[in-house]
Image (cartoon, rainbow, N blue to C red):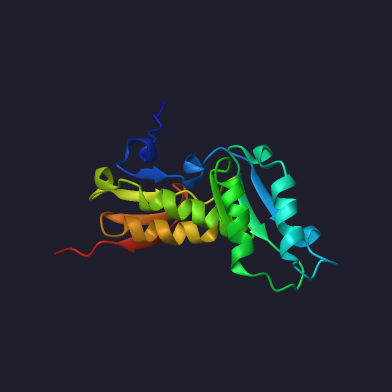
Length: 170
């Protein structure tokens, strides 16, 4: 006598939400301006502007760029703004900060524009493991977006999930 194995997860109304599915294509570039500074510490405006004009910005086509200075130099805001004006025709996004901040900004925009109407009243599981650099803040932003509409929110995999939220019955 054989007993049919039923996949209750596949038959459930549980919706799996994987932030990795929203990871946009494009190279991530960390642009360190320290090499454009005198001894890595002093920004000389004329030299900085010359380097910016001579630089081949087209190599950042369709890239996401994080601008930073890895030394203890004090960099005026206009310097980053100047670089952004050169990057604007080529890069998809430019931020001042590291690559983690860049990913956070990218995901902030993605999650802000998500239409979650179809998830209203449904149990949702947010997949936790990813092979791409999904920032931790993206998960917090996602919870903020899903909580008003979800029946419940779990984290992990269907076979071993952690309950995070359950809508109170009226």
